[in-house]
Amino acid sequence: MNLRQTIPAELRYTFKQFDRDFPTDDACLEAIKEQRFPGGESECRKCLKSRKHYRVHGRTAYACETCGNHIYPLAGTIFEKSSTSLRIWFHAMYLIGSTRCGISAKQIQRETGVTYKTAWRMFNQIRKLMAEEIQLGGAGGAGVEMDEMYHGGRRKNESGRMLGGDKTNKTIVTGIVERKGGRIVARVSPRITIAASNALVKEYVLPETVIFTDDATAYNALPKVEGMGYQHRRINHSQKVYVSGDVHTNTIEGFWSLVKRGIGGVYHSVSAKYLQSYLDEYSFRYNRRDSGNLVFSSILERVGEMASRKPALEA
Ligand SMILES: [Zn+2]
Image (cartoon, rainbow, N blue to C red):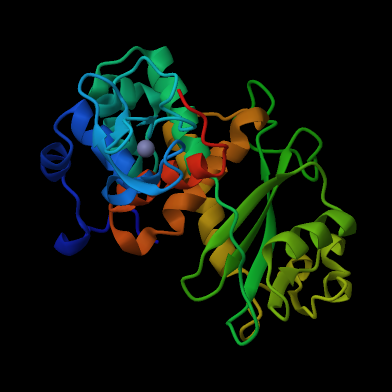
């Protein structure tokens, strides 16, 4: 993926357009209401019927047209308890959705005018929206590549080069990516074992998928994962054979280099504690890389999706 490629006009969402779509807190609230209760229609808890709800002036509530009972679109969302304005949250979501190679909390601070602490907290909350549970591959597809990356654990005063084979301080990330422009799942793994690899594919890879890996022993039992019918093709990296016909793991290596460049260039360093959420952020954008910078609307959709999984608490 070329990070500097220009976005075609139809996939470009400029700040000017964003500013016109979301000029005020009210406009942002209206957008969240539309995500959760399209057209203002919602089951009223008192009428026990689907009713139209109208905005209650000066509050983040909408009232039932018949009985006046209130619903709260922000309940259960990342905005519920925040004292930061919705418009600033949306601006931060726009920035995170528009970047191609990552953005820092410092940049969000500068662009939105909030404190660094607030920018950092917003970023973490927005990343939670970007964590997705998706399933890859499937019968008849081009297959998936599975590979691992070692992150961090560098020693001080060392110019970045690891000692040969010293992987003890590193965090392991396992990635699975669909070939042919497909989507990715990347998970921090406590260890790389046969059991861990098998559990991961069972969770994220559909039955009867062809799985391409290198020759690491952790992948030895993929075809034996019960009831999944995976086919396994492997490439012998340790003998410096990287491509042989269609058996290669180049697609996932492209994603690793994107993540490494992002962490090195934008974030400088990421602790193991936050690594998963950075991976979620990068994967979310990667999985929408053909949407230009229209990723903002996908993040906004996630607000409603995530909130509807929680019980509809009333604020
Ligand atoms: Zn009602």
